Length: 298
Image (tube, rainbow, N blue to C red; front, side):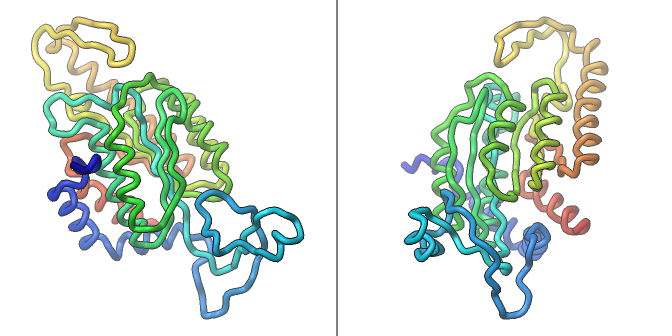
């Protein structure tokens, strides 16, 4: 059995394929809107050299420059239109939670990531993967080959969220890795102090990167479908708390709404696309609706 079978099972493939058919024109316009230098006409003019980085095609190396400098450089052309994407996945233990849905928050994020990877590869845009908890744990360099979807899912399917959360620290570490303008797709429940995370998101934007934040919560974390006396456990600290759910629900729902509203407001102000999701939503429908709204703004 393939390690990626859980996420490549027929129903998931059907969902991704259906998304591709429904949103093909939307995705094309969405990604082209992110490309800083869209191809025009038939001429391709040489622009400059840049250092070779992991993920670049070795065929693009300028061997004459190498012969003179003993260093690898890539010829950069004005007509380059590809944008590099990174799927950035939260591996902290809280992502492994589900109350009554089939998918945990982590599984839901993988389905979203698989769909976006599938769509970007079909656009011939390179896409890579980064996972983190307290720090960056795994990194796959961006590729535009069709095998990249399998590579990414093979890695994710072998992972289980178990770490503590240091989202802001990990995002700053990731930002330092980026060498050119990229599309950053972040999947997280954001269950940590919002202030440092928002600052890290601003830092990514100030670096010239396009950022899409998929805020994934479990359906129970959004709606609080509990009654009577109930005990909760913090997934990362293991601290326990008993509450009367009937008396606590209104206060909790208000707090979670304010939590999401803060991210919506701060992200809007800094140009980050904020997508609030919960695991009861069909991921393909949620993604299609987002792409439609994004395209209408481009």
